[in-house]
Length: 258
Length: 260
Image (cartoon, rainbow over all chains, first blue to last red; front, side, top):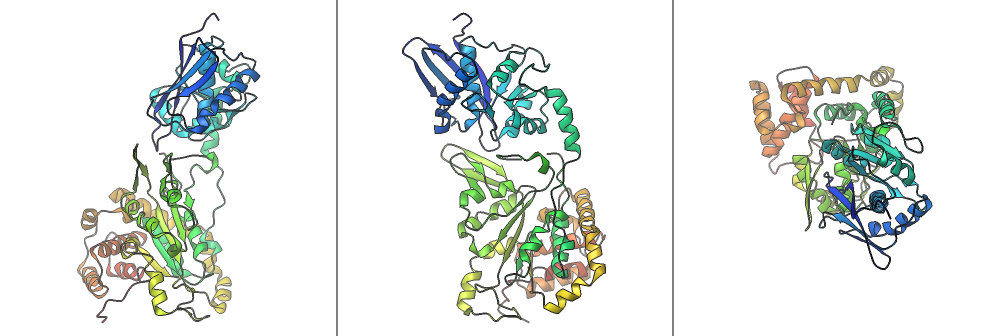
């Protein structure tokens, strides 16, 4: 097929504690009997990607490449977990088979679990990945639902998309304008998210006002809140220990910044 | 910040994690094949509340000592060694004895002294020593409950947000002066910011002797005294502040062999 590349590469990241090491998702289409293998220490859920990716590609109106398909998740010795690699694997296959061209301008990191119909499902750990992506100067393609999470990290070129088709359109775009179908424009959403974040909806907080009596315990809670002290309460069942403990967060200031 | 699902609305609210005592060690401390953060890391910058403290696995409780000291937890595996943040405020609750009624005016205790002893020993001395405030929560008598309900002034005070404002003022003050909260002051910092007037010094010395306080115990009393002084708006830690600090640690104290 015209326009095929020998090896297509799409970027993503793995999770390792607080680190999100870069993963290069490589796809190679070779001659031979049709097969589809994923190497690079994929966990069982990542090995199952093959079925999801195949169905998603076909149901998104693309052709599933014939021949011997090898997908490599580099680096080889890092264990790869989670459903997040479905999207980069699918995109790598589409680029390798010449059905999608990646715009040269942006380096994209892609994440997302694919449903059989091609829709993108949210995955965990996107905030951490976005933080690292921002540091590396890469743009992001994530499931729509993860978009807010990505932008919370301060990332300004994060695109939330609904399905595989929209992801391919975003990948092919050489500028940061809104995609015509499916995709979302990152910059206006980022403004919205910033306004929303300025006034977060406060979760219901239990306060000391709810507690009757227990003056000594209240004093102890205030001291604990003021100095960050640990606290142990000893008392008979039903004396109100759990209730008092739940009142501590309301005495603490909100978290700011990092 | 660490971990899995993120609720954007709850972004600035401090986490309050209250794992059940049947939670696995991996769930609480962190780990597992993917090295996921545990409850202690999810409680970073927030509160970790352990209800029914003696019911928790002993090894889990012991593994809390390091993060309580350093604010970090190191999870080692053959393939990797990960350090995760775990700076949480430790809050716990327990009954005084297995049946729960030791010292309860409403019901008498059914436990034998050895049973009580075994129950209390489930919390090791070193862990107990690291807990700054240890107080008894008495059962409120019926009259106290109804009297307190009609005590409007107290309810209004609490409702006005005054306690939170008080705590916040003291916190900000200490953060400005020392760069961290009193509970996290190092021994060196305590020495420099907590020069004691002679009356306070004497009280500390006497209490340390009478209660057989360990070095860490004295350190914790000083840190508490610093907070109490901050709440009172006082630069120096007075004897009264230290006296209150000592009182705050009394629950579960084993009286020293030669009590005065």
